[in-house]
Amino acid sequence: MDPRTLPFPAHLRAAGTAGAPWDAVASVADLPPGALLRVSRGDLDLLIAHTADGIAVVEDRCPHMAAPLSIGSLDGCIVACPLHRGRFDLASGEVDVFPTTGGLDADGTYHPTWAPPGSEPKPEPADAKARARALTRVRRFRYYPVRIVEGRIEVAIPG
Image 1: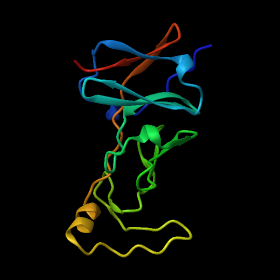
Image 2 (image 1 turned 180 degrees about the horizontal axis):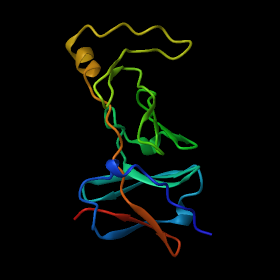
Image 3 (image 1 turned 90 degrees about the vertical axis):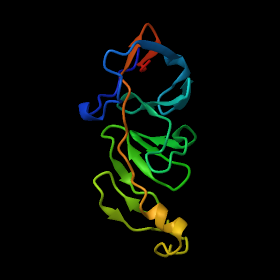
């Protein structure tokens, strides 16, 4: 039996995907539950995630600083970035745990830097590089419509 696809908030649909052609990007057999897979089409890198609630497709870029999420980890519907410990909910497109660098959320609210338990506390930004990180906005995911057809994962990819 083929897995289902993860419903996503309509307002977070990736631009240009309405009416876009469907492209077979992987086999369901290549993506067991809990797996992350990177697929590239031209200059577009996609993350295909087999979450606890179904298969989701977003750009393979952390919504914080664009690190590839495909080398992160997946726990249920939460994908963790390997760079700054940010955790993002693929079911809602929202931040689960803000990245350690702090910064602005999608609505513009500031979140301070933080340190994982057992680590030295992080000071508030002082130099230009740190201030730039503090002003980096963590955006919401943009989702690519996905469907399962005869064991293939197909994604609507803009032309």
